[in-house]
Length: 164
Image (tube, rainbow, N blue to C red; front, side, top):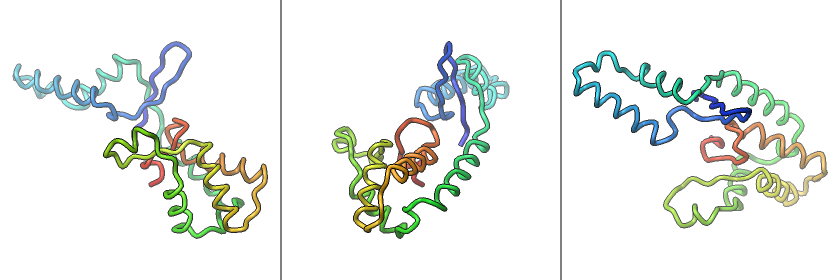
């Protein structure tokens, strides 16, 4: 996953390269214009991407390091979380069945479903209760930490891709 950060003033927004349709159209337009001018050799993907990155003040960041950090946190949490006592297939089926779908997702044909931190903690707490496992303030906090370690883009929601 290539990661980028756009900075505006003091606020930092994290973006994923190429995840917006406008970026793709802009890059295609640049390439099409270069083809018409017979200078497509000078306008390649890397050049066009660099222009867009510079134009929007986007700074690259080390996605590999971020993923590694999240995976290390997940391993640490897995060793102590009560979820370790739940069969993975059973747990995922329970979460899938109980995930709150937004009205937009219900009305669209999209298979994308996202889950907030609060929803994750609530559904996982219910899963633990159903399996007669103790749920404490500490374990609820750990569930929140598990969510945070899975939320790779720090959006506050888990997308289908972040579950994969």
